[in-house]
Image (cartoon, rainbow, N blue to C red; front, side):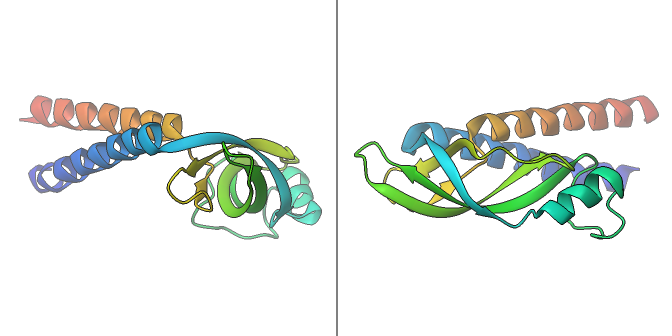
Length: 145
């Protein structure tokens, strides 16, 4: 157990620092924009399989969660100056449900063609989850010692 704690503690701390770094960068230099989905890799057949076939035909993918599916989309959006941009973004959707045709993305003000669907609140909650895992790990390690 001691070896696991010795390895896991710095990894969790580094993960927390990375999440806080991404949150700070997104709030400081990126801006939100409404994006219209132009195309997606989540077809009607895949949606039907996820909803009624329990995902047996599509197989397991590394990015998928228990009830979510990581999809890639081509989106169109306008920056603060009114210029149109196109970007490829990944986002999670509820497995088996039809994804919405519009959603919020965050784009880099220095390079508006760079965009992400994972905004600062995603990274903030991820960091909070890693923090809870760190507290539970250290608490369990102290109780076992």
